Image (cartoon, rainbow, N blue to C red):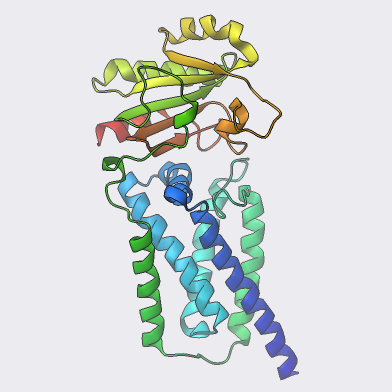
Length: 312
């Protein structure tokens, strides 16, 4: 009986460990130019109330913790005294936040953009994980490994996270925005200084309200970034009415909504299938600092953008 129970615990331990490792990796994907971790910060942490600086530190810390828990679970280190209780605390904290997002159809960010999940889907996953962890805690009867080694492992992982993905001064370092090749405007260099890039449908009420909010901010903030709009070609006849509503014609271009070929050259593909109108992207020197999209918990918020701009 004891041997059978140990096999069950082994399978459950490996399963939960892999879940934590996958969750950590997914938040980093894709790793090129730190796109994954930047997206995690701008799409999920900043809307929760984190500042740009605190989001950068918290993202690396929490991903490091997930890697740490995953590794220690796989190698059966200090489970009952430290790792399982820590896992339960993290799962509980994430679940409390997810409860506040119930009803939203937006990606909760638990698995980054690699495996988008709605809040209720993530809650089900967390509930199952929570039950497994409680069972493991009750049935585990020993601690394996040195506590000092566990601490060293944690410090090593978090140090590596900050070394590989430096968090300081993103806005001061110029990179090439992923949207660079798609923006066609002689007076809008997306990689120079502060810029705002928008993806709008001219017949979309929410897009019109977002554009009007941006224009209003531009009249109130002297150093407001230049704005450039990419419209889908679905309703180009509505563009004059769009700008009449906004109060001013802004820099813009029109892109075909969808082109069925192997190139990424259409509105839907450039914006990305995981995002929806209206999309408002604030960039500094090509660095993506804030990405608003849709009409859910990540929708454009003029007052939040004002605070971001005025605090920099």
